[in-house]
Length: 181
Figure 1 (tube, rainbow, N blue to C red):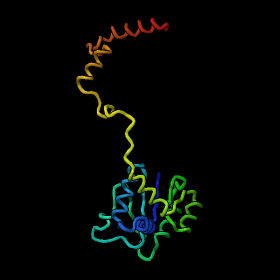
Figure 2 (cartoon, one colour):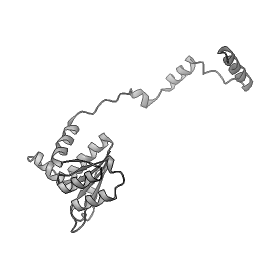
Figure 3 (cartoon, rainbow, N blue to C red):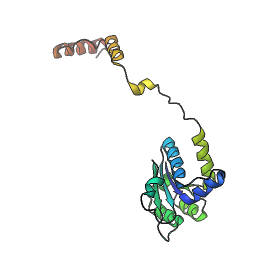
Figure 4 (cartoon, helix red, strand yellow):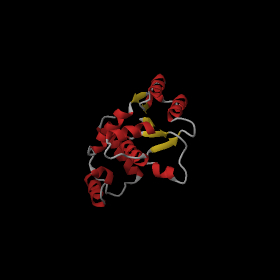
C-alpha cells in the first residue's frame, strides 16, 4: 500500500483530535512511521512551504516516511496534484487530505481518498492496539540447535557417512523397483 498525505492538513486534524496534547510535525511523522511499519506501507507526506534549513528536516523525518515540502509560493495541495499527475500506480494509492480538489484529482486518477479527520483517529486507534502475535513459532526463526539437528539426522538415517556413488545408484535403482518404476 502507498499513501500520499497532505501534511499540514493531517497535522491540523491530529491537533483537533486531541487538543489537550497537540503534536508537531516530528511527532506526526513518527506516528505515521510506526503505523506504516505495521502496515508495510510506503508513505510520502507533503508539507506546505519551503523545506526547513540546518538539519531540521532530519528531525522531522521518520523511518518509513518520505517527507517533502511544496516549496516557496506553492501549496501542498498543488504539489500533491502534481504528484498524482506523474504517479504511475495510483490505483494502489491512498490519498489523505480533506481538500476537495485534491480528493477529486485523486479519484480521477483512480486513487482511494480518505479525509484527514477520519484517517488520524483510525491511525491512533490502530497504534493503541497490542501487536498481533506471530502465527509461526519462534523456533522457526531461530532454527534448530546443534543437538536438535543431530537428532533429526539420526532419526532420518542421515548421520551415516555418504555412500559411494555406485551404492547410491543401486539404492536409487532399488527404490525405483520397489515402487514399480
